[in-house]
Image 1 (cartoon, rainbow, N blue to C red):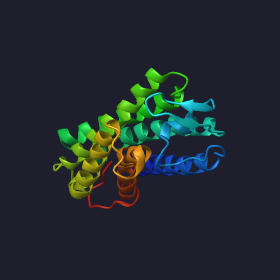
Image 2 (image 1 turned 135 degrees about the vertical axis):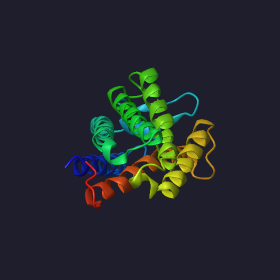
Image 3 (image 1 turned 45 degrees about the vertical axis):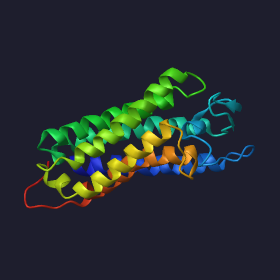
Image 4 (image 1 turned 180 degrees about the vertical axis):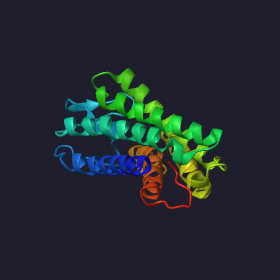
Length: 214
């Protein structure tokens, strides 16, 4: 039961986060939202105007309350899913690091939603840094969790997503767009964790073995 609930939490986190990125972005009118130009955080800004002196861009998000609610909800679901799934992901120190890191990344999303960038930039940036650092750490730790029967089957996927997220994080923070825009690079940094929890969540919902996982 714990595994199914953990899988459901992670799937709901991933689906709600992606859906909010699409639907809240579609609500923008002037300007139109651009995944290449705009950051994910721009969807949660509460005021309209030119935002960010270091990379000025017009921001006006009519559905910002929905986006910030999803930030908080997705963060809580990530953390709850990790806590519920810890038995299924064990044993091993690397698996424990992955669980703790997902919880920390979830807390980062909660902070980002509670403190939009144009309301409390410092706390919002702290939340974003937790998302970047611990999201990547979770995937790379999962790639090293060879003692875990479940994670051992996903070493290649975890490593690929972890390295992709790490590369995206470094390039995003360095403002290197690589042809997809700085906003696009942020999504390269952030989306791998949601791809990973979706994959593991599906396994938790339908995973079968001779000995129960929980």
